[in-house]
Image: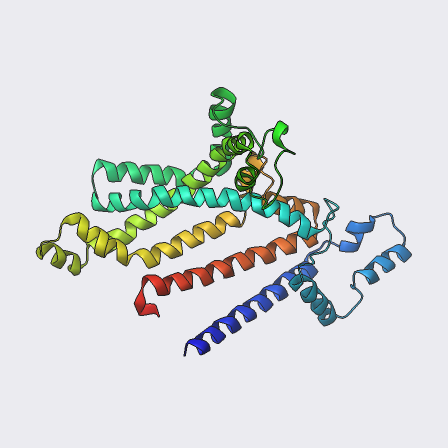
Length: 335
């Protein structure tokens, strides 16, 4: 039975990936931009146009083009980015770790604050503490990210000088860290360069805090809702009648029963952060995935855009697989 379940899941993932490849391929063909013109320019003659079109395989039938596209994508060949002049795969190897580092720190902040705040708001429902948490969450959930970023730079960087400015490092440290993983904090520690490490921390702390604030607002709100639903159940009253303390009931029963729902919420929040916090990366000049995707869209570079779309889909598929496995660990009824 376990082998059959794994086979079904693998088949589902394969079908999803093929569908995703087909979707990105036909999106690229339906867009009004001409990749040949983007390469050779408007002033090239017809002979040059036909030569480049043939070299790109655009004179082939659609099914042949799709087969070539799928082959290239599955082997990691995303073509060349017109607006950078580099291979898209190389650009993504530089851009995605920056977003991964930023998103991971932001989700740690969001979960570390959002979950306990949500639990406490539910336990002390209707109190001043509950109202404060809800107002703080509402502000974080509804405030424009770019505005928070600009205000943060004005206050904490330009005025107080307690954090680093835009970018991942100061200019003096740009070439001092060897890119082992692309994650600056890890690479700086790998090299034993504590100065570069703390400089990287000073640059990442503000954008991570702003993204983490938004995630915290969403996670705390959902946690509060899940906890209120559990605290209203009869088994909570029965556990209290049996003599269990209030916090023992919350910890052992109520909170444990919302873990599956929380995993879904956290996974979705993390996926959207990894998709690319475009406005935050733009405000902080963060050379990440979202900023790269935006630049590709503005330049009409379909190689870069379609590769990014494909990676976003793979991120969501991967996190869905991880959450599915966590469901089985946290709730034996789902096995």
